[in-house]
Length: 192
Image (tube, helix red, strand yellow):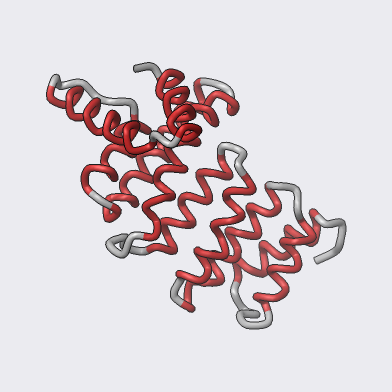
């Protein structure tokens, strides 16, 4: 099926509560294509992989989606990429609470970055608090810096400044934090 057909089917399935049928069709389609020596669309393959093999494959599926989004953005409009890929990101997000998922903080950050890349800043921003909470204390500042950069991309420099200043109290020597804070201050009209 073409990407737009899968997108329409996914939208319909989400609206009428038929996601289990969609997921079963994704798995079956991928299995059939692979058995015939064909390659499924990358976002279909990514979702089917997680549905077939479990949450532990989410990092690989997110890498597949990252490449697919990058390729499609180069070929078409952001609006088209949004329509083709957003449902796949939503389905993968359902798996992020599974205990078998390795490195939850990295998966949450990767998913947030993909949402931001297709212009879904609200979805991206909603994932970052979970990523920070799931991160090892030594890595929380990295998650906060990514969160702040997404706030900047979304046009919220004041919120980024506030977030970074709060974190700076606990990690004043973190180089990326200080650089991101300088960027945020400039974007907010202040001086670093």
